[in-house]
Length: 491
Image (tube, rainbow, N blue to C red; front, side):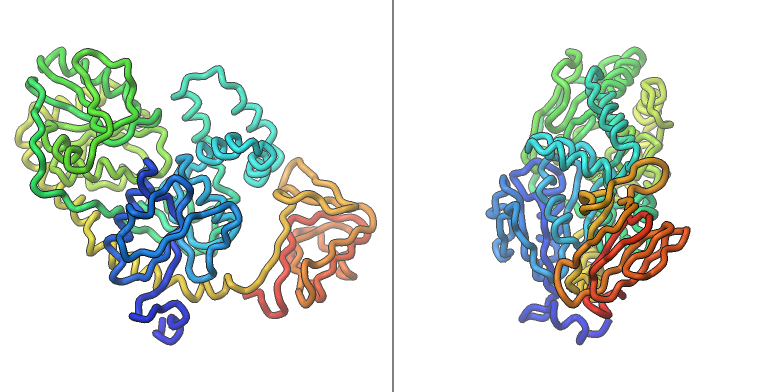
């Protein structure tokens, strides 16, 4: 791309400009930490403006970053827009902004159902939650809602049920492009947005503080840990059962959860540090003899805590699923998914009983994770990403309006049709849809036995252009989507 084509997006120093819509600290989601790392590593190459939800503190950002609080009616400017999305409640306002403004989304996870369900129901907007379900699951939406409303399940069972229904449809529909943090996530996202660019970008890690504070190692022969934030998908119960089995043969082995959010009802030989500041967190990682990360079912996430463990040279046992399948095979030990305590215990024993294995795995894991999480890698990848966005963003600034049968209420004279196939508006009499503004062309996806503005419909779905933008329906047929653009605006 030429410098001339980039010119509208360059600031006075020649850096490309972009808006970053994201949670920021002290919001506890890992997305906030990730965003700050990206800003720290790229602010010399990219002129960022940050839009953050309520609960964020702009003093947590680098001092030269301009920032604004994201309000419900905020219209994020039309230069390249990047939205950081994860499956935690702190990302709900970011998701709403993406659906309102459109742009490039960074999918930290490929499941968004927990976040959207919690956000809509907490706001008392069951109607909007149902619209999301209808958009994604069409005629099955009512069945999905009823299934999820039966709460006589454990937290782990409910978490797994939600993961069966990712609820990413409308978010993906709002994207001009997507960014994923690992190839497994990209392989799940790409088929959902055919024709749109999907990039894979690394997970930057913060520099290790120096000097690290001293942490007293608990009195035990071996210390085995899980690190990061606890949630049902981490399978802490399986980890504890595995360590219990290891204790039967290895004697004085203790388990530790390094971080917050873990279960309280744990055996006396296990303990939790609680949430730690970065220096203490890094110190705790470095006194572990082995670590375990048993995410299942996964959300397509990249585990920042696992990368931190690997960078620290800790030998890790992981579940063979999601992004973990793309880790170097000589840097981790994988156990089959779904993970079992027996398999995990056998892998832990292999690490603890085999000094040669530890000596081989540790430097391989450390070198690979350090390269993945380096500032140089982040700077190069984000600069390349922004260089690819402007021409696409320019297309998106063309004023457009759209209606979707799966999302909007049927116009007068039409009814919503649910059943086999896509959600549609069915017309069986004369009906009309007026354009939202003058001087537009309507592009209608329709089929049936009738006509739209004098244009006969085919038996199969097709896109019909209508000059002037007014749709006049006669006969009978189905419409799934209407988009209005200025003349010549469809590219």
